[in-house]
Length: 161
Image (cartoon, rainbow, N blue to C red; front, side, top):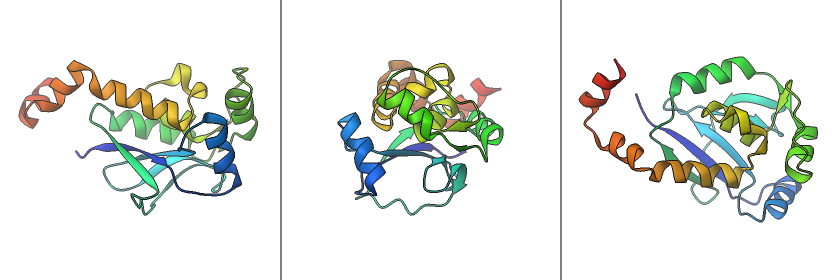
């Protein structure tokens, strides 16, 4: 099975992208999970909510963070459970701009979906694209993650059995 990536958007985008970057003091305004088959999974304001889509990820607009520890079955299960939910405009306002922790279970925003799909469900509404990027990069640096990823594929398959 191939690698899953977190793709974080650093392109100019629209007014909404600029507002997210300004508020989070970051170059990032959106995130996607890129599956081994090339599908991008996320919640998108432009697409109306949680969806799968093929996106041409031009590296001048996106940074890609490999996630060797990500569980594809969990990502797919979370996607199946939330596919079609609307975009959480109120949640992004109340969780990101005014950190009140109010979450609409019927809707999601991009970093909330990606965090939940990566197993970070409890704190998912608190993540912005930049915070999620920083957290997954820290996870990637953990010694046991590096060790597990350095094992030969045969050894990893035995451990999964």
